[in-house]
Each structure stands twice: as C-alpha cells, then as structure tokens.
Length: 231
Image (cartoon, rainbow, N blue to C red; front, side):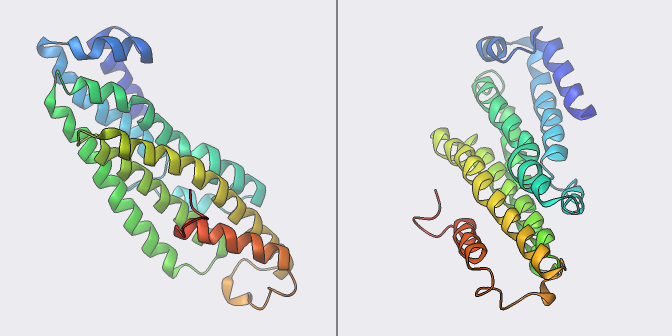
C-alpha cells in the first residue's frame, strides 16, 4: 500500500489530480520533465497490486490465509479481495496506454506486468503440484490464475490490438471468481466429511457425495479450460 500511495502522489504531482476521468483526459498532453514521472508512478501503483493480488514475490500470504473458514476462502480469497489488484491494473490500463503517446517508455510498465504475471503463474502452479492440503492446492491455483490475468493485460499493453488481451484478462477475472468459489465450497464439504484437510486421507467419495463430486468436476473442468465449461 505504501508503494501504491507513492505512485498516486507522483500522479498528483504530475497532473494535479487522482480522478480517473481527469487522468484519462489529461495524461496524453503531459509534457516536459513531468512526463518522466509517469513510468515510476505506474510501477509503484503496480507494486500495490502485487501485494493485494499475491503476485511474486509477495504471494505466500494467500496460501497461508486458506486456514480460515471455507466460506471466507470462497468469497474473499477466491472471488473478491485478491482480485482487487487485478481490477486496479485493469482500471489504470487505459490511462497508461493512452499516456504512451506522450511517454513511449511506459511500455516497460506493461512488460513488467506481463513478466511478473507469467512468473507467478508458473511458480504457483508448480507449488500446487507438490502441496498435500486440498485448500492450499486451490490457493496456489488462485495465485497462478491471477498471474494469467496479469499476463493477459500486460501483453495487451504492448500491442496495437490491446482490447483482445485486456478483455481476456477481465473476463477471466469474472469467470475465475465463479468456478474457484465453487471449488472452495466443495473442498470445504469434503474436508468436513473426511475430518482432514490432507488429500492422502481422501478418496472414494464419489458414491458418498455425488452432488459434491458433480460440482467439483464441473468446476475443475472450468479451471482446466475445457471447452463449453470455460467461458
């Protein structure tokens, strides 16, 4: 949050406002030494998004937070709170994309977003593969999926047809909120039935919990990107 506040202060110094509409209208005309403050401001604001959305290197807090109640995990850690960083990047995306007309070096901001997202997606996915706790696997998956969203919007800022990656990142934000919340709720049902959070204590539950099995299967296929099930 300190980094994000520093970035906001730089924007206010450069343009005299922190209002999104005023920034979007006035940022393309900024000139002189002030325009060189836009790139540091963008990177500092992204620093706040890194912490909020659990991107590298500030990602380990999210899997540890999965020890909370399942309903909290489903609502806050899968659908709302951790997506705030992605929403912030999506909200400032058009502002800094327009600003590249005044300062082409802002492309480095989008490249940093893309590389951080790609690295986070890979690292978190590998950590999920070796985790033994059901909800922690889903937590690492959440971190990885948020990395994909960041990657999409970061790459979008480096190309002319920016709307493809931008729309894809925002759409995945909404679709992921639905199927990951469902996965956390079904995981909570399984943990409640088995009385353990470790996956080596689970198995053979399809006949005992058919509705939970069906819900988790559909949600898992959405997570894997299976056609029809994935938006």
